[in-house]
Structures are given as structure tokens and as C-alpha cells.
Length: 244
Image (tube, rainbow, N blue to C red; front, side, top):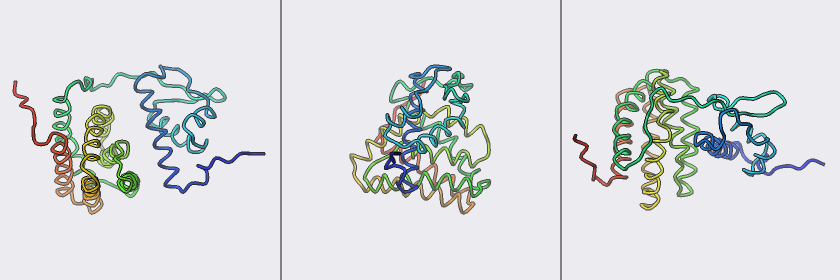
């Protein structure tokens, strides 16, 4: 007699949310080195139990990791971590609050132009990626939560829509750096209440709308405004003087 996991009967949006959470958890452990190069991941049945999800949900997360070339499969043997390559960009870890400010500065130069290019070059598949991230953000906002994984997924989808691998690879290399700022920003939003979360969701939607409408100038302006507002909410207007 077969047992049915309740997650198998969940709506598609719920299954997507569960697979996102598993993906983020596994990716974080790989990037931290919890699983070493060429180390075998736990068996699928064990991972399913560990994360409390069905095998189909788990496999969606594993497929994303394979697409990012973080893991590979050996037929009949399981899933293994790839040898971690050093980033060609060589960013040093975030160590101070001033580093978070520097990261925001850099994002203002990179992501604004990526948004403008995305407005010119996006296709339906790219818009679909943004919509999925927006749906996750919307669900979290309705629960008065902030999801850094969905937030980053939206920004990554914009970079992908620019159809220039340098924007996408730069964002990937900065993932852990951006996450630090997003996490602190999320904590600030939670303390400010539902209105602040709604404001951030509206900013993401405005970026999406400009890209959907193929308006590069507005897409650039909306992305700039969003990143600047995020920085202001986090730093409260008290930026560091980074003069040498």
C-alpha cells in the first residue's frame, strides 16, 4: 500500500513555494561548504523526509541545482556536488555595514541598466519568471512576511531578461552579498508593519510593469528608485562617508 504525501495534493503555487524553499536550503549548504566537492548528497528519500516534502517537489529543487551546475547526477548512484569554482569576479565577503552600503552602490550601477535592457529584450518566458517571483512575494506579503529568496529571484529574473550573461553572472556572484542586505532590509520591513511590505511589493510590480510594457527608461528609473528606497529603509538616511 503506497503512502501519499500531503504535498502531492497541494496547489501548484504551494508546490512551487515548497520547491523554492528546498532549493534555497540545499544551495545555501552547498555554498557554505556543508557538502564538499564531489560529495554525494543524501538519498532523495532522506532529503524528502528531512525537508518534509514529496519526492516530486524535491526533484524540482534538485533540477534547479543541476541547471546551475552546482550538482550532477550519476545514474544509479545519486546526486553529487560539483567542484566549486572560484568566482572570476573574486568578491570578498561582506564583513561590515559599510560593505553592505558598497553593495547597494554597485547594484545601482548594474541592476538599473539590466532593467533597461530587460525592457528592450524580454520575452514571454522571462516575464513568466518575474511573475512567479512576484507571486511568491505577494503571498509572503499577505502573510506579513518578507522572503529574501523570492526577492532575489525577481532581481535575477530581470538580469536574465537582459540577455547578457555578464549581468546574470554578476548577480550570481553577488548572491550571498545581496542576501545580507536583503535579510536586514526584510527585518526592517517586518518591524515597520504591513504598509512597508506592501510598498516594497508595489515597487517590484512597477519594475515588472515597465519591463512588460517595453519602457526601458521607466524600468531603469523604477529599479533605481527601488534599490535606493531599500537602502534608505535600511540605513535610515545615515550613510557612511566612504571617502578615502
